[in-house]
Structure formats: structure tokens, C-alpha cells
Length: 325
Image 1: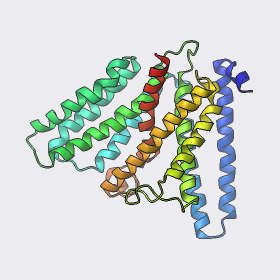
Image 2 (image 1 turned 60 degrees about the horizontal axis):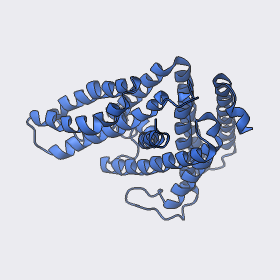
Image 3 (image 1 turned 135 degrees about the horizontal axis):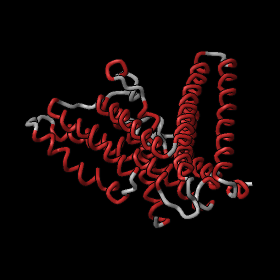
Image 4 (image 1 turned 120 degrees about the vertical axis):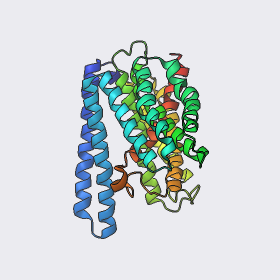
């Protein structure tokens, strides 16, 4: 069956892909409604509402991906650029900055971000890979130093550089998958983006389910996260690997290669999500868009894409290295 699907044309594969995904989301929506009706107490009602919130996020992400697919590569790159802008806005608004950082922030939002995504669209992969880690990493502290404000200088610049690395550099690797030139895989680059997002998000859902329902698992770092354990992390990574193997027919990978790439992406996404929990603890918030929402306008987008920000660069460079493209 999977070999049959793989031999279909790109248009036929797209049709089957969205039928399967929207079908699964439709069944999950029915399940969410049933859980709400069946809820007998407040805790069950809260669990049903949490499930429906996660489901709404999945609907939005799949619908946006579908629209971007229809609109083409340019709109997909523009879409991820917008997500980077909003995610960087969230992390900066909850970080300590001063007037002396304004020039660095203007450069980050209106120079670094568009240049990075231009390099993605133009397929300048060598420059795209080093532009932020090398050139921007050096330029931002220089711009801040010119402002003549030494108070908490290292902390302020670390906040800005960390936000640029996660929200711009990390996330920009997702649309870069569209531009990889695999032999006999023309016009199907968006499948790789879908593969990455679906596998990593599935990993995070399984990990969250295990953490909530198997509280006997010992947390790795309870001062950072009471729910993150090696048991839940392994459950999520293995589940993501198996789902990725089943989806090999939409990728240029063989089943074993799809399994390996899925495990790499899920491991990077899981550990990255754990790191973002530490950042939230440091900022004194539970969600990027919760407590500071009225003040900052943040809506929690970074909570949804944090794992992708870490998984995308590791996945992208693993694919380039393994397939030598």
C-alpha cells in the first residue's frame, strides 16, 4: 500500500495526504466533543478543554500549511518569515531590554530577519547557514555597545542573540526544506516540511500525554519542569519515529532513512522544547502568551513552534549531509 502511494503523482499524493490528515483531525474533533459531553467532574472537563485547545492549534497549522502549499514556495517562505517575526516579538517582550538595545532590535526585526529569509528563497545555503551564527552574532553586541549603556550588557545581548537564533535562524530552516534539490523529487519539497512538522508535533503530543497520565515518572529537572522525564521523552521520540516511518512515501527517504531522520528531528525538538521551559522559568511565565498577553500582545505562538525551531536546523543539515545535496 505504501509503495503504491509513493508511486503516485505529486498531485495524487497531495490529495491523499490531505484526505488522511483532515480525516484524522475530523475524528479527533468528534472525540473531543464526546469527551466534553461525557465529562463527569471539573478535572475531566478541564482535560477535555485542553484536548480541544491542542486540536484547534492542529487545525490552524494544517489549514495554514494547506493554504501555503496552494499559494506556492514564495508564500510559504513569507509565512514562516511572519511566524519568525511574531515568535521573536514574544521572546523579546518578555526579556529584559533597555533603550540602548533599540538599534539592535530594529536591526534584528527589519534587517536580519528579511535577509535570512531572502537567503532561504534564493537558495544561498552556504551563506544562509553562517549569516546569523557568524556575522549577526558579532554585529549585534557592536551595535549595542555604540549606544553607550553598559548596564547588564551581557545579559541584554544574550537575550537578543538567543531570540534571533531560535526564532529566526532555527525556524528559517523549515521553509529551506522547500528549496532542497533531491533527484526525482521535483515539486515535492513541501512534503518534507509537512513531514518535519507532523512528526515533531506528534512526538510532542505523545510526550505530553505520557507526562500527564504517568505521574510516577521521575522528572529530570523538577525546578525547570515537573512533567519532563526521560520516560515521556523516549515515548514521544519513539512514537514520532514510527509515524515518520509510516510517512516515508511522501519523502525522498527509504523506510529506514525516514526512521532515522524522524528520530533525529524528534530528539532535537524534545530537548529544544525542554530548554524553552528553562527560559520560561527564567522569565517567570508559564506560557509565552499567557501572563503578559495584555501588555505585550503575545499570544503563545512560541509555545506552539518551539520544538520546530530546534528540530528544523538539525533535520535540515542532517538531510544535506547524509544525501550530499
